[in-house]
Image (cartoon, rainbow, N blue to C red; front, side, top):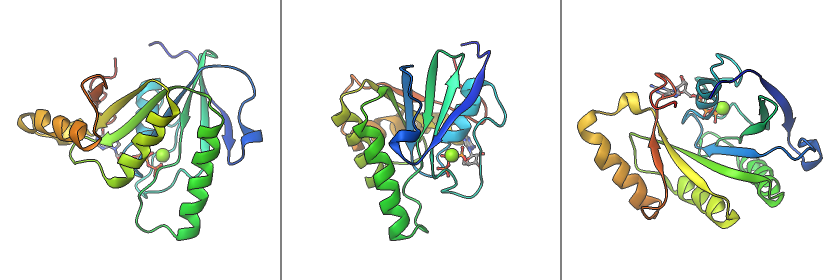
Length: 182
Ligand code: GTP
Ligand code: MG
């Protein structure tokens, strides 16, 4: 995809702050530090569109990125970072609940770590997508850190842990190297 224009269209913590037009939305979610922001930068060929951080839990708002004025990628705040207070977790839950309740998702992208089995939080997140009824794919990021010989086993474990049949697409990806960007 040729990205001619990519811009932050809105930053929201409340529904009234969401963009009000009808552009299609691709919503991406995953654990803190899994590479959601990096994936967005890689897909759009921008170095700093979304903020990438070594400190997990940095993205705490819902960030709407508008691409070619044709659709939006929505960077949802990460979850599962241990050092987060109960209050912060509740805030996260409310943000996500509101966003899913608005039923704006045209495609869900769930990002997991290609190196590990999905966590319980990942399973919960996958169920949010499933229950929303939107089409959705899984991206197994940080492929560059997986040995070739281990990849197939890891992907099978991801599928099994998330309890997905063969109908759900799991795409190995590296935001770092751009592998499988196309
Ligand atoms: P939060 O916003 O905190 O939820 O994190 P995030 O999911 O947006 O992760 P982010 O893109 O900020 O990346 C977290 C760290 O992982 C950074 O240090 C990235 O450089 C690194 N990273 C992201 N993608 C990859 C990848 O494909 N391979 C490797 N090796 N590192 C990656
Ligand atoms: Mg982020």
